[in-house]
Image (cartoon, rainbow, N blue to C red):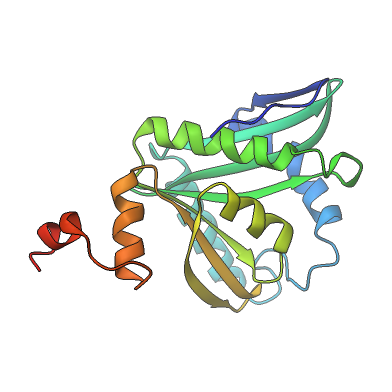
Length: 195
């Protein structure tokens, strides 16, 4: 996956301890029109919030692989993308955004490719993301990059979500095409599934 980053834009990997300060306040602005409740405070008791913080601390303190990318234009922060290891061989692309004046320049595609390349190089067998089902700009960009629709989810927080998965290994894409009914089993599939 390759694309060219426009002039004066730079992508930097940002340490986790600095990354939150960069994107969280901006995310609240960018996603302010989304019908979402932010965080668990409005619905969880103080006891539940305490347990959640402990679980988050334990999970983040482990050896899970994580990528935090900041997008900069003339040294000014203008976007981000981040994700983490969700299971031994699964990488979850959690959240991305480009500030409105910098959209429609292929920057999201570049950030997406950076994360996919990093996760693929680490050996992840699947790289997936979740999107509100009408987020066409992102869904189309991912489909063009080789992601496949693998699931639909009804989330109590976000509503109807679509899962898109990228399989770095060609064989996994071929298996998905066969399993979905998109293609008849070829010799390879027949052998693999003992058909």
